[in-house]
Image (cartoon, rainbow, N blue to C red; front, side):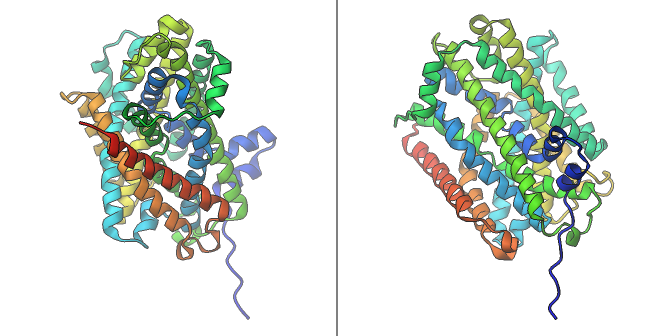
Amino acid sequence: MPARPRRPAPGARERRVWAARSPLTRWWAVLGPGLIAGATDDDPSGVATYAVAGASVGFGMLWTALVTTPMIAAVQFMSAKIGLVTGYGLAGALRRHYPRWAVSSAVLGLAVANTINAGADIGAVAAAVNLLVPVPIAVMIVPIAAVLVAVEVWGSYRLFAGFLKWMCFALFGYVAAGVLARPNWREVLFATFVPHVTFDAKFLTVLVAVLGTTFSPYEWFWQASQEVEERLAIGQGRALQRRGSSTAELRYAAWDVGTGMVISNLVMYFIITATAATLHQAGRADITSAAQAAEALRPFAGPLAFVFFAVGVAAVGLIAIPVLTASTAYAVADLFGWRASLTDRPRRAKWFYAAIVLSTGIGMLINFTRINPIDALFITSVINGFLTPPVLFFLMLASNNRAILGDRVNGPVLNVIGWVSTAVMTAAVVALAATWRP
């Protein structure tokens, strides 16, 4: 008589949903890594990119928020599925089935880009706070980095995850700023549903920057590893316990990811709307940072919009920095087979925590060098731009590999959206390379 297939143990979301007593608390119980990933997509460097898009090309980039929402949701869900079904992070799952040199190259690029991005975000948080409270930016750099490291290294996983989850409410400050900017809603709706594309270097540069910020490889590594963390947090410490996922858990993960990505692109939409309605109309296309965008909004949209925007930059930066450094640590640890969990104490996962501290520390020090933060972010954008297509390619291969996912491989809809996303990102990078002039 053949053995009956093992039924996967209930996942973290399933257990939280069982314990919830109302539709609202059930919805909140479902939300987790996907919501946080969506929030980090609007980190200060992302805000600066979207602000530049609105200031330089007006409402002409709004359609990208609509078009990319199903694309980023599909890719993020595939990352979640790999973590849920295999019980490993993305780098750990890929290195078991694909050339190590390819995975190592991706992890190296990810680590460099994330560390630079984290450093830029630390500076951006300090600059945003400085707009609200007259404390010198340089004075705040070290305390911000130290507090975030302390929360990650010595705080409990539940404290860390809960902190990030509740901080996501700050995202709606950008929506308020967009409304207070008083845009022409007829123009906004037209630009949303009628795509505008011009094949010149300026437009393509902004387009690739927006796509590169929206499709962020570090979020895929974060998502898969956080699915593993969620299981470790409920006592599923052995690999066999974490392997496989119920249909309900996958459905809840899809809701989580879908909610996070919709909110992420909604915020992107209103950032572009706010800066297009104010800065673009006034001919102010010289925006180079999120804090500068917040300050520039003040005379055009009023002090309340300025406050909402500045608070949003600071709050989302506090979400993004630990996610950037943790995703680096997860990827590096998975590559080398180290213990990698925020549920472990530092002495049990010392190399994992050392990677977090090192990434945060180097990022912090960038703020005390002569490296221009805008140049640093440009380098990050270039790395991410060229990193995204190959990582997407391997993510698609893994999502269709029965040796990895068994019967949880992609269906036709996910495959179409995933391969279209890969083609779009590849085409965007090629177009930029073809039109770029030093």
